[in-house]
Image (cartoon, rainbow, N blue to C red; front, side, top):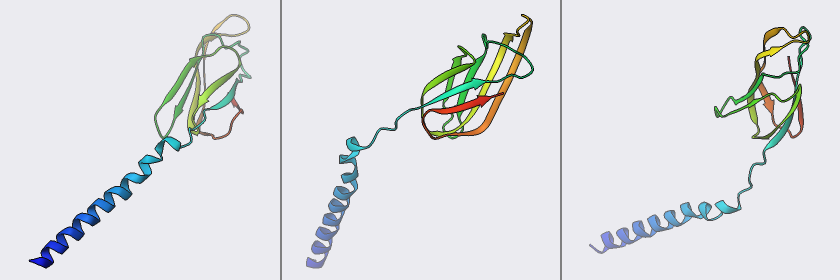
Amino acid sequence: MRQKQILSILLIAAGLLSAAIGCEPFQDADKANDIEGLRAEITILSETYKTDGEGLTLMLTDVNKGTMIDKPVTGLTMPVDNILPGIYNLSVYGPTKDAEGRDIYLNGEHINYPIIEDNKKIEVE
């Protein structure tokens, strides 16, 4: 009987110790470093059609997380801020006008493109 009591006390002590050790990393969670968003400069290239890019859409999709950044193109070179480091599919697409004013539809992309450094310059054709 005495051995069962000692064994029970040891098991309870071991359980409490495990719980205390397991919770310890959460006490330091507020000290974790924030992931800084990166900045990239996207340049749209079109050798066939000269365009100012008005009407086009830029979409960045994080391959692993599925998150998207979707924004209208504001010029042939545009900054994109707050990109989390990762592998992205980049697409530029939509209706626009060429230099002669004709309606055209452009579509360019990069597949599985790594964005892992700040101030990255990316060209999309």
